[in-house]
Image (cartoon, rainbow, N blue to C red; front, side):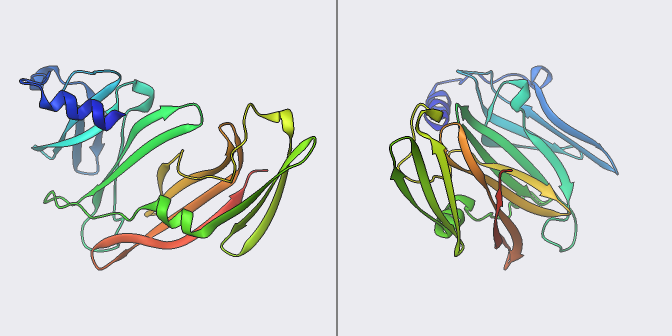
Length: 222
């Protein structure tokens, strides 16, 4: 839905751009000789910004990125040497969608010359590691889940959720974080919109100029 909204907005003549001095600041860093600001280049439409100006040490470039316009979901920006080579990169994490049992995220890794380092699809990696079977019993539902060859069994009261998925699912919720100079994608494993068995994490490393999956792990909810 956000992409359709933004495509429609951008197609309009004079598509609600805002002057530089009136742009809403979404995130900034001013430390360690770094001066970075992310600001919205359009007014909010249906809860979305459809264009973000990235200013890095007095140089600005506008990207067609999408971001939820609620302050609680503003972008995150950080500086770190994520690829382990040369200079630090800017990591931008955007929230692109939200709802009951759903959250969309996008990530961009920029070098100071505006070159973007591609990041592999974490959902595809997680889906390749996950399989499951659903069993409907009289008073309970049971999920037998296999993640990277390790088996798990979860049982829930039938009336514990309004509806149950026919299989364990990932991809409805995607979040990113940076920890110890490593990029990690987090995808809760859902068996209903509000029921989670745990989280699959995909950790990235640099390979031939891209950030690709180096480890897929599962952390059970306690």
